[in-house]
Length: 207
Image (tube, rainbow, N blue to C red; front, side, top):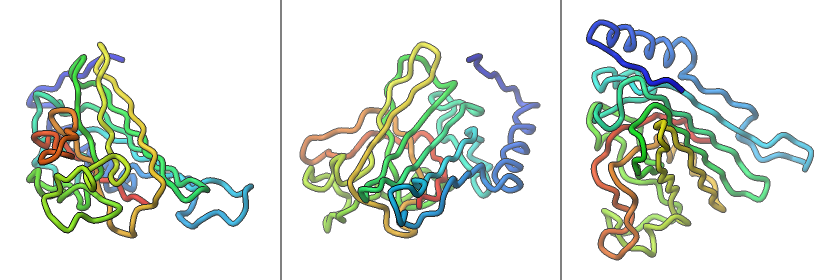
């Protein structure tokens, strides 16, 4: 897929387009089915899909996704997040990226708060079982079974896809964004769950 280049003139156009995407188009969210648990095995599986582009950080009050580091997550690069509730009671999350740097590793996690102008505005990682010690760097709590880790590596075209499946559901209102980090997620004690600086953020109204 071709890459996109943006100059100062069309950057403003992108901001306007992102605003339309987030406000007029209902923030690019498509709910395929309600969040309630299906009543029969024939009922549709609840799904939610959001797709948008990363806007400049100045657009944070209304943009669906923002980049804090335009070198590593360019303005105009694309992101899609898909959530699927499983009949077993679990959750499947899929993350897709396009138009990023080639052959690069990114850490990615679900966070508790919406994106803001500051990388820290998205809050900590969502945990199914909350670590009483924060920040959480204990592998007993900071692990891919208790969190949603979506680390991924781009191909030569700057595209990537990752999937995480957990056996639990998000608490209502408890998960609000996906954040991209500068490196793969660490797993060792004292650093578990860390992945370096926050590069970009996308708002996701998880079910």
